[in-house]
Length: 281
Image (cartoon, rainbow, N blue to C red; front, top):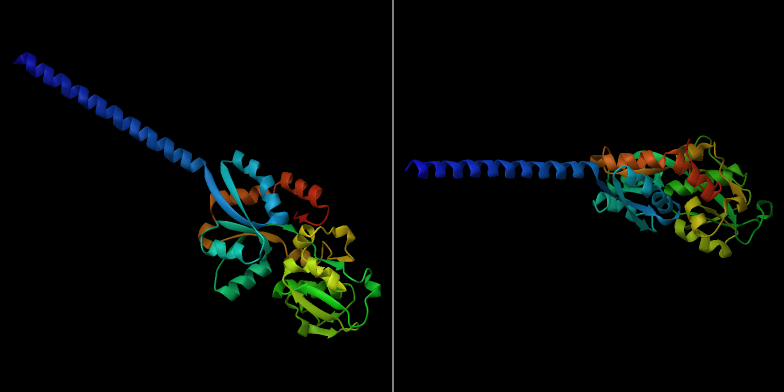
């Protein structure tokens, strides 16, 4: 009986030891899993192809070293990147400036926010049928973006070049109703920003967003006029990373902004885009 009792006692002790080891291994595995989860973050960012997606691709390997995996979703329009964030199919986007974001929020009842400004794309006036601004005829057809914020920006640039005069202090809220002097009797052709380059053969000149000008093969050095880098537009229309309020403190997105504002990415932007895209200081 004593021998049998000892055997039972030995088996009970062995089971207890093995159970303890299993629990420790399970805890270790859980801790490792949690550690890996904390150190590896995945973010999905929507972006216009040029230059935004190109800049994000350059940032990818730098982010990977920080434990952040970036998926770039390339989009060609100016609506889907925001609706994607609203609907949670995207964590953030990179394609717009703050006035456009504010206008989108107002029109759609959304509350997207900016978590960092990255670069500025100078608007330019590009030649269509007319090759010099001094040759612009009376009644000239001028193509401009058809959304509120970018049309205001186009009007400000035309005013900068003396082609029209706007009401005093109207600033970035300018509309065609705010034109007080139009000596050339300019006729405005409002088009979606992505259609402006294609419209050049059919208009005298066009005022084009920097990213769409690049995408259409235009160079800022060939523009008839360009926004001043230290002017109102440069201060107002910086391109941003936008996200939903619940993700504004997301570690992966914070790392993304940090990398995009880094000296390495600033240098990449300067070399690749030759003034068509200007990194912010």
